[in-house]
Length: 161
Image 1 (cartoon, rainbow, N blue to C red):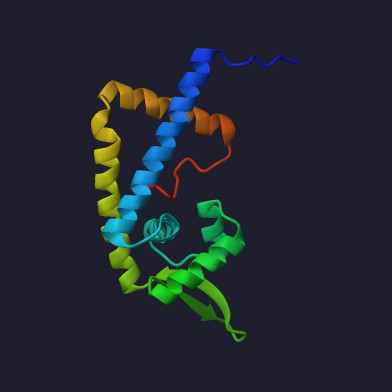
Image 2 (cartoon, one colour):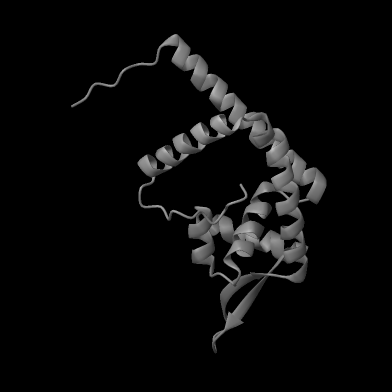
């Protein structure tokens, strides 16, 4: 059994800076989405997932794509249905809900939010990185994903996080 080494002071400083940067970046991106598009981060995640799917999804598929439990997805969909972003379709004699799709309003909201969010990602993060820094961060991120979630689909559905 391998013994785990504790972090040294410089490693703790690195980790604290990394975590703070992530929290601040996430906060700013979420605030920008709310201000510019009047949508929350969870709404954005659902819109983008449905947009990239290009078709209706079942709740289970949406739940798996978002890595959320079905209860959270169901509650989010209810709120978004009230806003006119998504619609649930029924099929079969029993009228069970079969799919979730974007409405025309949801499609417009998704397109606008993707554009705004992409610009904010560029402004807050990418423009500050050199190509070499971006390459190192991408390689480290991909390595971490592969190590922690090796069976995860290689192509994430929530590409616009």
